[in-house]
Image (cartoon, rainbow, N blue to C red; front, side, top):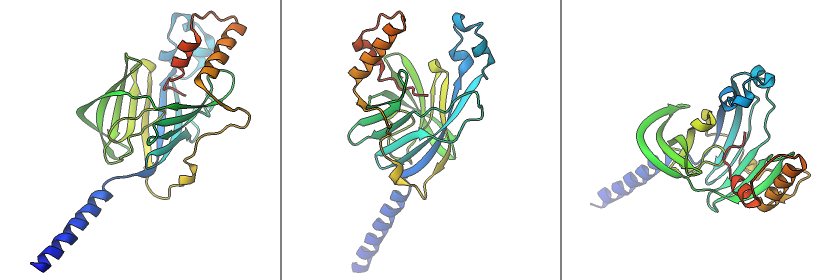
Length: 249
């Protein structure tokens, strides 16, 4: 009985180790971001725009996401295939433990830094599966801004509930994402789980600008509208709400 008890202890310990090894908690993911420029600019006012006509149908760019535990940095990766498009410097740092994000993006003339809480998305998990970058993922449907549908594929084996841009809230890492209304998709092309430089998981910085609050940015954007004579009925409060936008590009 004594030996049976010891054997059971070893068996349970082995099972715990085996289960733990099935989950990935740190790694680096490359995302290919594909945006249909022609469809996005298909309004009547752009129909005869020579610049829009000269662009390729798709804008393709690459971003790297490095994560460890519940912290991650999503930032520009290798250059896209078309030199017609400049590489965006937008980046997102997320701390899921504190439900906080720190973004580097350009709402007006230059890049700014803004800290904000992580928005919650209403997800509905389905039964459909899909293999992305060699990992099996499950499908989920989400809604942002009350009416914009998002299709996501998450991997339960990669356990931080994070994803590209500011998308979170699923029981696993989002490796595939599509927003039909934005004619944009994000799909992982490569996943590395060894030799990860965790020192790169840090909030983005810029040299000349201080960190901005939503109100400061909203006031600056509204001022810019007026300086350029652009017609707008938006208020500071409405612009503050729009600054929670998920799309960075």
